[in-house]
Image (tube, rainbow, N blue to C red; front, side, top):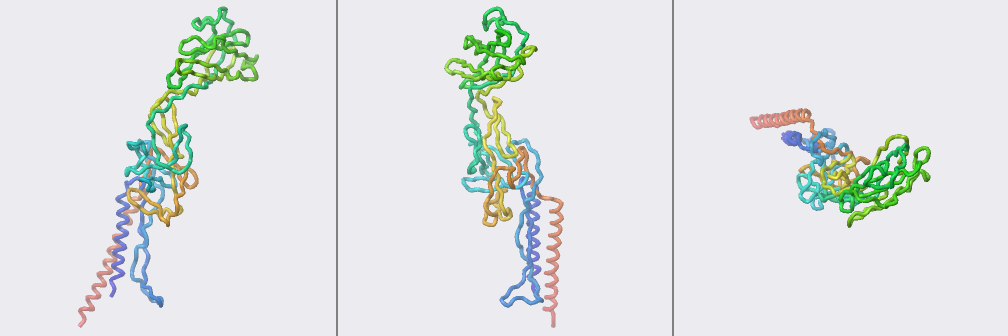
Length: 403
């Protein structure tokens, strides 16, 4: 009599129960992928081969196969929590050792690097000084807390209407006397140190369809003193080929000169009251990082206290021809093997790579109901194999007791 079949069945049932128990224990682990034990039958082999009446000698654990199906995505309050919706893995670097994970619970360490709970660095494409992301070899992503460098105002644009019904003022222009010009407005501009200044614009009608524009800074006398001429067509549009140049002028303040080109090509002259419809300029003061956001393509954008935003980097994902060939390292980490193939690295939401969702995590893909049923099945298999051994023992005892 052979106890080998029953013994192998007990071992197989125990291995299956181990896999089920591991799945159940990780039902709440973010990014966990369930595994199932797969078995194969075992036959005795010889050089001469086996006959048609050969009986198997038991069962063997063939492999533990992981299921990389999508888990549910749940929302969190942390913008650095990132869920992958689709294929791919986050690419992590631990002192140069590359691993891969589906757990997107990230934070910023004391040095500004984006890391996971084990301290491994998230990798991606970094942005240059101008905030432009340059795809290259993935490197560790860092969130810089340095102030955003101020940008002096060099260009601006005004969309406004000058009242065609206005009359020519009787007295010569004097910026301190409102009766010597018809309309005025002001816009905030910035010097190279990020200091704000108020630039005033004065509009004085000099003849039919003709206006003079004077500019001044921080309440000082306008410069140039002669002003700049604007003319309009009979239809109320800016004259000289539909453009005014654009209107350019230079303003100086202290040790930080401002040279601003102002575009007034959209100005109109209609029979309605003066009004400013739009006002833009390209300068801003310094700003401190006040928040982060991550797009579906993995672009990390910083929001600053001065109202500006800038791209800081882009998360990359990696996929494999055979994800089941990856080696599990624990802590939700996998490593590349010869069976998995080389990682295919790229930007999220491209090719076979999934899209990212910020302030969200991917839950475990474990179906607890199914796992509990599998647990019952493994228990019954164990009991049945134990009964097989018990029966073999009873038969053996009968033989021993023969007289």
